Amino acid sequence: MRPRLSVALVLLTALGAWQLLAGRDVASPAGVGAAAWRMLGDGSLGRALLVSWRTVLEGFLIAAALGAPLGILIGYSERIGDWVQPVIGVLRPIAPFAWIPLAILWFGASRGAAVMITAYAAFFPIVTNVLGGVARVRASMIVAARTLGAGDWTIFRRVVLPGSAPLLLVGLRLGIGLAWAAVIAAELAAGKSTNAPPGIGYLMYLNFASEADTNAIVAMMAVIGLSALAADRAMRWLQARLVFWPVER
Amino acid sequence: MGRSRRWGRHWRRAGLTLRGLTAAVGVWALVAHYLDRPLLLPGPAEVTEGFWALLVSGRLVEETLVSLRRLAVAYTAAAIVGVTLGAAMGAWRSVDRLVSPLVNSVRAVSGIAWIPIAVIWFGVSELLPIFIIFYGAVFPFALNAQLGVRSVDSRLVHAARSLGASHGRVALRVVLPATVPYLLTGARVALGLAWMSIIAAELLGAPTGLGFSIQYARMLQQTPRMLAWILWVGAIGYALDAAMRMGVRWLAPWTGVGRLAGAA
Image (cartoon, rainbow over all chains, first blue to last red; front, side, top):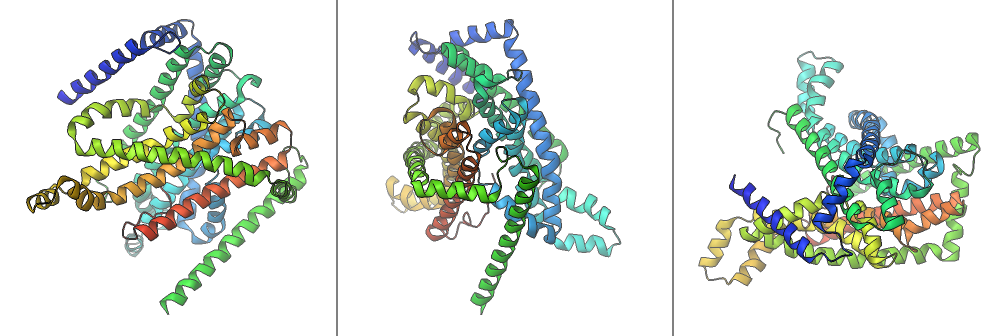
């Protein structure tokens, strides 16, 4: 209870100091609150938030649906790993944002481009962590299970999957965090040429390109931060539910 | 003998890597050939040509140096600020109580979301990418420094103190060595994030640099050059991480941070 109180106190004091120090041209807490209220009232914030959440979830699900099986496959079979790993090694250091212009070229400044970038950003943490998770499953446990008469499927389901689950969830958590950064970058870059339903990054672009309304921009930054935080909390909840046993490090 | 076997493994690895990459480039060439839309997906030959043109004209080196200079300035600043702040948070509970809530609430907002307001504050200038890189790199430094200082065994500190060591000496000889693995982890994560941030910042708000060059090639509809830039960004990112790993293995071989092939 006490630590929470001190956190609240520190944050309130900081907000108060910010309000006092903010001049007319700088965003202030009161101004940000008013801007948020206005955008909530006319529904623009809610609609934009829904669009961005949808993009994040679609990109994230694509990344998870491709990345998790691929990671397991590479980790499971050395033959496949030898072919695929060099390609992953080459693509992984390319910052996801570097692909934005290509994505816009392929899909136009549409939601498709944003989904592609989001999926790309989330893909690599998922693959590398699943791979690490499968590699951590001890060979002796697989041999033991086989000696006891388990088939391939049982070994996969009962040994490999639980063994790699902790790192899989770490990968998913990192992935959704990067997905939230990527969606904003993609929507900002698509900018004025977009024909997609406006996400929150695009709403931000409008506010800074046309009227430089710093209060509205800071309000949207806060909403983006809260969304990323909510996604992270959700993944943590999932982590605690699915990996309920103590994990050795 | 152990040495020659290790070299044998290296050669095998290199061979497998080459095989995998050759296959990937082959698939790319086939897809590009049958798709036959060079504006959307040029083949490896065209991209190599574009890369060569950029190299010969000097643009490649020039823009890379611009980006690397920004990276160096912002990364150094982030290291100084982040480690100082993190160490103070780790050492004194009162600082932690005061600063942690602020750091945690600001940190939730990704560096990308700061770009619009940074454009308003700094204009499209040198300061904008530097600010965004700094923001991306400062938190891994701070959080790892904090963790590291907190991980120091307090019995060692007490022992050194009671044997007559001054505060400064304890910091230098006890706290610092114990913190090094954490600092190096922080440095490595920070470098990766900094590299991502610089591309985004230059793409959206800088008239020079690698990120801008990708966007510029798209505007001119020079897709081969655009892909050459993108792959080049990956090559530099890889080289930076490899240099970091080598540096760590040389500076602090006992930590194992250099061996870890990239989580987080």
